[in-house]
Length: 418
Ligand code: ATP
Ligand code: MG
Image (tube, rainbow, N blue to C red; front, side, top):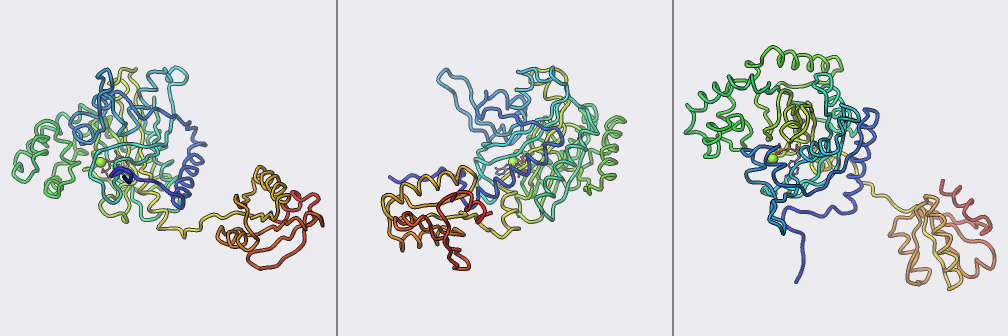
């Protein structure tokens, strides 16, 4: 029997992991001066955490979760998103008591049982950042400026920031009625899910991926017309911060996002390059969630960034130059090999990338392997060289060779390699 990874679950192989590391390192570097700290919640949680947090009528909870009972019959779910877990941890460990405003980020895998296709997997990865305990709008602007800053340090072009406000539950009462009336005239054009949603949770229709529904929604009334005084002011003020900092955005009143917990600010960052899976980041304010999950009444805002989609963009942008060893050391003969083992490891522990063979091989075979490894230089030390107290250092690009004394070899090599 041959084993292969499960459909929608993929191996991330060397060659690609370097780009992942670059992205993650950039995120950590960009988040730090904003005062964000890393949190690492577990991947498995009680199912209720998500069904209560994300909302029963969302695609995620209705059809995408990997859920199963544990041996005691408790519902367990592989997390489909990170916010609910971060909020659970914020409540469970009373992080709000340390400081009411907590800025947290997390990087890791998410699981959704959706149809695998380009840019869509069943295990995928996100970078999430959340500001808990502040009502905004300055924190909304801060978070958006930070995420745009991260994308710009990655050198990504052709991205657009779409911005909307969903108002608060009060604004939505009137809007839902109006939307409901509008959708009632269009039921024939809607998919069966949306026909149901039109009754129960009409905002969800905005998030439907079915073409016909998208068309219906393109002429739907705008939530922005229904914002009350406070929500309007919040949204206006956020836009002013973004305008002042010269962050371009596009108002998109159809942007509701696929989770029920959002209110006021929602945003999505899209690229023109990935076809229909064009969203690289989605986020928004979720002022009610901490309370819904049993915590204090604390507002919050956050975003989730899809790593796979960003990595794809980064790889298109850059020429892949894979990293290669700084040095290859070829030993010849039993005595030399033991010495080489020590030198090689001392060099590695001072941070120099050094390769060598494991099984004994002749010089020709070792030079071949050195060449294949892409090592920039090769140091040859046979038993004869050992006796003479000097090795031969060959530059693999210029093919120049020179003797290097074996006394003080580490210092010499560090200088040679820089
Ligand atoms: P989409 O509309 O593409 O399904 P979403 O609204 O479900 O996205 P969010 O839950 O907001 O996505 O997650 C934030 C980001 O995570 C998305 O913008 C996307 O980059 C990424 N993402 C979401 N689902 C997947 C998936 N199945 N495979 C790969 N990346 C994903
Ligand atoms: Mg989705």
